[in-house]
Length: 229
Image (cartoon, rainbow, N blue to C red; front, side, top):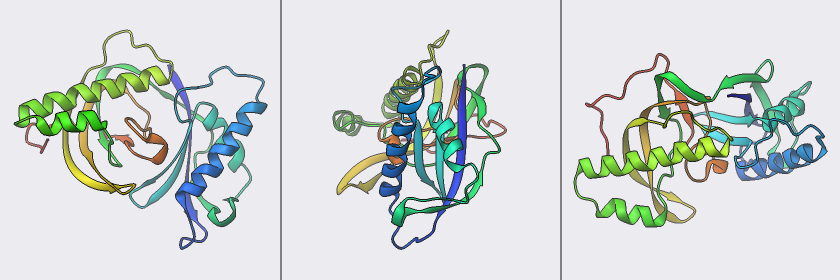
């Protein structure tokens, strides 16, 4: 299947006062109002965050998927900024038009790298992860988690793979302070037969920008010499 995608890169007009949470809230409210007015519901996604606002390294990005792509395109057309009160952002760059990208099981696997931390584990799974001893057991555990998250992504986008999703991962973990909690997050790469458009999120809290992935081009197989959990 193909997904409609539209991407903006942005720059806060007032970085000192800017709140990415406030900007996300503004976009989410606007996209819900936009979707409610649409009479044509074909191609709508209902179980996945269709507008994702995220900080990727030095870039502030807004990524629209399906109806979210149509919304962002309409919102930004003819404008140099997105007015959101104190969280107003200048549009630095935009896609020329809504584009179609493959979301499908591919003949050749692709390698992806996490651009933002991957929130992979529930509280229960975090305890299981820590109780495991040795790299092979932890690698196998995280492989199972990643397969589950990729399968959830496919289901959320209403895609039923004709063959099982496969993957190979080399990820490393560390603790980060998130919402006043010390949580385990993961970084690294994985290779999968599922073709994923750049800057989509997988795992938990994708609406907050976590789990953002980007395809490596050319695809580089995950090497045995890379660090892992």
